[in-house]
Image (cartoon, rainbow, N blue to C red; front, side, top):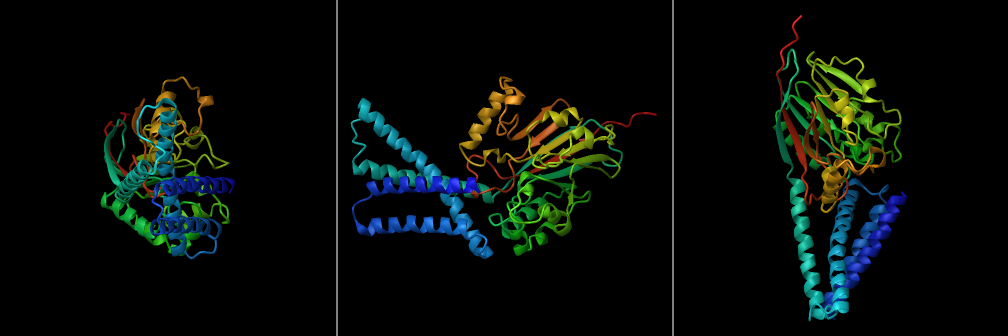
Length: 400
């Protein structure tokens, strides 16, 4: 709760700063300044109503308030950065006289404010398009192990769906259609399937969409950190909803042998207090057969490598979700991979691989950017994706 209150305070200050800079730039005409002020007042009212009365609002109203509030949050961040840049240039110019332009006058302020507004709106428009048009990332992998009855396997992986008030039933329906279009042999949903609470799932009867997910070798889920966020519901209610209502098999530190041919391992998220070590989970696994591991958070990839996983799939990072967080993640990954940062000193937001594919020893690794989103429905510099792994098992059986 403290985090949410801090976010509101930050938003108030950012909104006030943007409003004041716009006020200074606009002509002194009530026809312009009165609607301008009204927009800001309305937005703050929506923001506060959505935050403080969310428990009492009907679904449609809450969905709208949440969308407006999160959109405004992203808008204020980008606008603040651009306007601070103007103020920085103005300050430097005042000290050094680099430009002859009077940055304190109204005309350049107005031009810059309007240009910034257009840039942010265009950027967010593109980000919305990227969110509403998920990418299918398809890869061909070869596993040099014997799989007695399955020689080729088409695996569809989706992570970070975040079904809830923002990612509503309409969006989930689009996701399910897109997943089923890939004609999967096996479907893996790798954590954060649900967003913040279970109430929205029941209100929308969300299970009717998830029940449409079908594959010959099954639909499997591993838990993510959001499955362990409890907002007034019973312990494990969201996880039980996935299995009991949505009809999916949830692997909680569990191993299953599929078609007597390959193993699937589903790890509990780091938030689980009883999470087991991977070697303990895989005690009964015959590693002569292929092993696929689902692990939501890609903090220590070496765990899956050392345990003998042939394929390991992850999510959680969203690849930063929007610029510049994706760039910060990429840079921090480069720093971490130099070896200069010991594992014991690595912060949790620093990843060996924040997004994409990597072959690490004998393990094929993929960290997905995620299909859905937490918060603003915009993909700026990142993608919403479904991952399709076309796997071939090649090795012949060991002779007796």
